[in-house]
Amino acid sequence: MAFAETFKALSDPVRRQILELLKKGPLSAGDIGSHFEMTGATISYHLKILKQADLIFESREKNFIYYQLNTSVLEEIMLWISELKGGNSDAESK
Amino acid sequence: MAFAETFKALSDPVRRQILELLKKGPLSAGDIGSHFEMTGATISYHLKILKQADLIFESREKNFIYYQLNTSVLEEIMLWISELKGGNSDAESK
DNA sequence: ATTCTATTTAGAAAATTATCTAAATAGTTT
DNA sequence: AAACTATTTAGATAATTTTCTAAATAGAAT
Image (cartoon, rainbow over all chains, first blue to last red; front, side, top):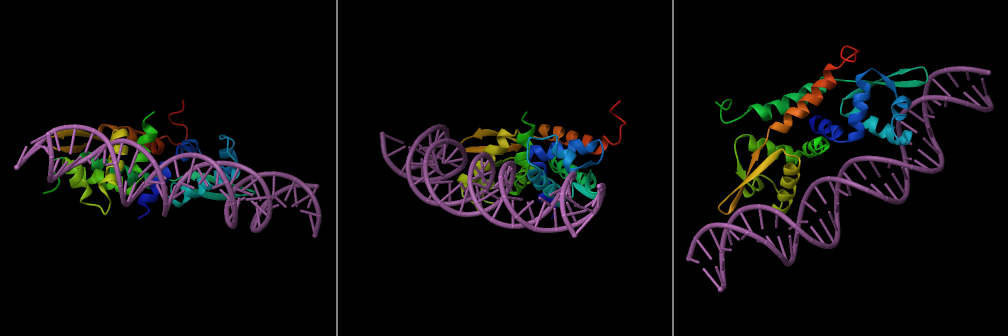
């Protein structure tokens, strides 16, 4: 159940902002870091968590590691939330 | 920005399970607690966090406090995720 | 008014998470 | 191969979160 990991990953504001940055396209770890007042090591830590949650993936090119959004896991989250909303009274329990 | 609070609240497995319990209808704090191996104090702590995140609301009746799902905030979360998914390339940036 | 029941609050301890500095990797360029 | 660049890993510290026990509230029942 990587599900819990995904929610955990999404719970941090820095990580959510990283995802928003990646919305516009792939970025290197350094590029991402330049948007924050943090050391590269800390950014790397956040990237690792996002990676483990399957929210991003990397591709190496030259000296750089580029990160990209992986939207597929977001579907699952949407589904969970959607069911929480939808499953009212006893409509689906039959 | 209660947005961050909501994500934080959703990041804990116990709290997500509480929400799932409430999906079927209102429950008292005690009823909720009986589903977990935790003291009532801890359950109360989690309920407070869910309340602050606007994910649940309470209504007092007799000796009991009943908790209910509040789905309205979930819309916002869905929207955020949905935009993360949808906003690819430069389709909407124009 | 005392006692009982349901729940919360306070304070402390344990566990987890975010951050830093320093060192390690690994690939690039000279 | 030596030096440089980009990034990660390790280990430590600080901050936050989860959990507990004990005490406080508050309403209900006797």
